[in-house]
Length: 79
Length: 299
Image 1 (cartoon, rainbow over the protein chains, first blue to last red):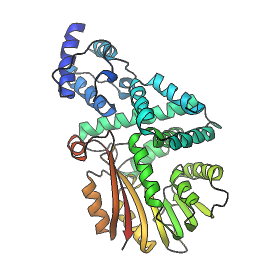
Image 2 (image 1 turned 90 degrees about the horizontal axis):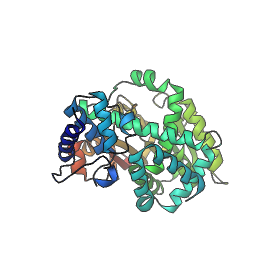
Image 3 (image 1 turned 135 degrees about the vertical axis):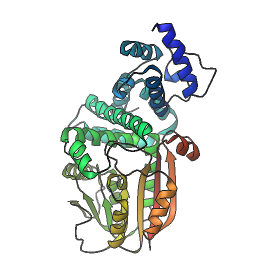
Image 4 (image 1 turned 180 degrees about the vertical axis):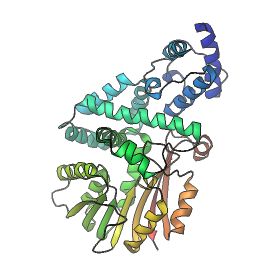
C-alpha cells in the first residue's frame, strides 16, 4: 500500500472518529490541530485505525506518535 | 512555575505529545496556584528518593496503562480482571510496578482535571465532618488522610490499608506534612472486613476503593457496621473507568446511588466529573469515565 493510499484511508478514519467531514490531514497534523483529539479520542482513533488496516498498535507506542506522519509510517511498517 | 513542577511538565511533554497539549491547557486554565504549590511540595518530598525523570516515567506508565486498559474496555465491554486473586497475582505482587503505579496516581491527583475536581469536592465535603473517631479505608499514598488530619475536626484518626507499602508511603507523607498540633493518628495494615475496632466511627472516608473489590455491597455493609447512626461518610467511585487493578465495573451514577441507598445510607450531596469534560449523557453513550463522589449519612 502506498503512502497516498494510507493517507486517503486515514482521512476517512479521522472524519469518522471525530465526526467531521471537513477534516483534512497531512504528515504534520497533530492533536493540537483537531479540537476533540484528546486521550480518549486517541484511543478510539487507534482502535479505528486497527480495524481499518488490520494492524495492532500497542498503546505504549501510540502515545509516543508525534504527528499523523508518524502514525502513517507505523501503519505501513506493520502491513 | 516552581522549579520541580516545571521540570516534571517539561519531561512529560517531551515524551508524550498528547500530554504536552493536555498539560499546557491544564496549566493555563484549570490548576490553581495553591495546587501548584502542593504539587511542588510533593515533588520535593518524592525527589528525596526519585529523580524527576523517574517520576515523569511513573506518571507516563499510568497514562499508557490507562489507555491500554481503556482500549481493552472499549473492545470487550468489561475490565480485564474481575477477581482479587487475578490482580493480586498480576499487579499487587509486582512491587516494582506497584511503586511506580502509586507514584503515577499521586501525580495524577494534580495533573488530571477529573482528579483535581474530585479532590476539591473531597476538601469541601470533609470540611463539614466532625466527631470523635475518623476512619479512612484505603488511604493509599495518604493525601486525603493528611487533609482530614490537618483539618483537626476529630479527636483521633485511623487509616486502614491492605498494602504495607501504602502504609509506609502514607506515614512518611503525613509525618512530613502534618500541622504541628495535629491530633493523634494510627495507620494499620489490615483487612477492614476482619479488623476489630475498639469503638464506632463518626466519620469515614473511602475514596476509589469500591472498584477494587469483588463485592462492594459487602464493604458498604461493613462500613454500616462500624459507624454510628448519623455518621458522615465520604465515598468516591469511578464509573466506566478501566485501570489495571479495577475489578468491579460500575456502569452509571444511578447504579451507585441505588446501591448505597439499599445499604442504608442517605445521599446528602453528590458530585461528578467526566474525564474529558463532556456531558454525563455523552460520557454514558461513549463509555467515557466518570468520577462520582458522595457525602452520605449513615442511617
